[in-house]
Image (cartoon, rainbow, N blue to C red; front, side, top):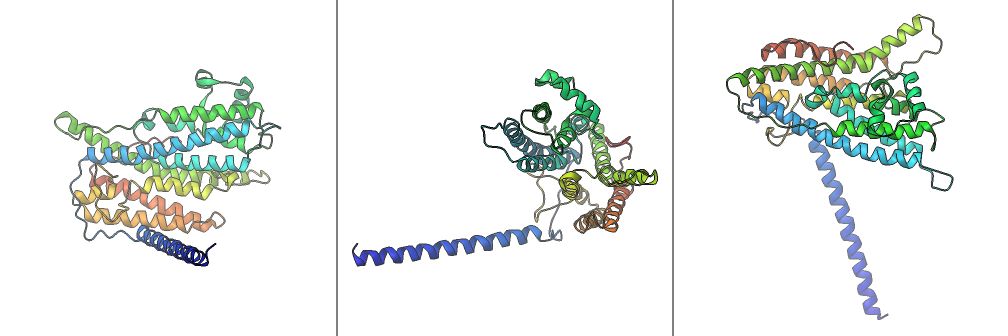
Length: 377
């Protein structure tokens, strides 16, 4: 090779390496800037919130919260279906699929479900979707009976009761040591995932008319009342069903002299309880507070409750909402399952927020607190 050309090639490689290094540094700085912007507290002082109609608020939540999270869940379910099929069809002649990878995909899928189902509205409420695919507690005897029947397809799974299928059934099967390829338990798991996916695929959120005249004014008022009640129910469900109820059951069993009692938190076998609480809270917080540095546009973003209140001129009420929601978020960030005091602080913050919603927010919006889908659990 010509020495001159060799020198040029060497210099070119050096220049290329320098440019790549500069590009990496720039990308790193941009990521830091984006992370800083995301973590930056929302400055509401210069925001001018418009008046939002109830229909605009509900439509924004339906399309930009529930609709998008349902789409994300469908994507995770598709991956879960593939992972389950690969694991359950593994034979001695094929490459084994890592069970930990399957469990990780289940966890990601369930976190997506918790974010979607934290506030139950629209078709989820109408179709009683939570009961269909997340019925708790699981009835193990009914599950084993269903496995013995080896159901396949839509019609066969329709005959299986909710207490024997859905996310809890899959979670249980994944924790069993005999959950292996080619077994009836593994085959049933595949059918369970497909059944969940079909149920989620039926969830369709559609925007309703923004025109409110005559009789529809009453319907719109009822819509806000239902929405606020479901928000209150969502906060109650996180505090009670996900945290306090397992603790109470643990204490009852301990007082009854049951040996070796351990609190059965949600997803405790996978060490994901705190992440489950965080996912559930994220699904609630997203529709309560403004999260960006710009005023939400109803046709493109979620209009959270805070923005709705500010658009009505109820600034003090909105400020108080920010205070209580922020207190819950801070308590969650400091929460550690190994520290009961921190768990108690998180629950107290949720209860304070719930009480504030039931009294001050409901009064400010002139709606009645009645029942939500979580009542009676």
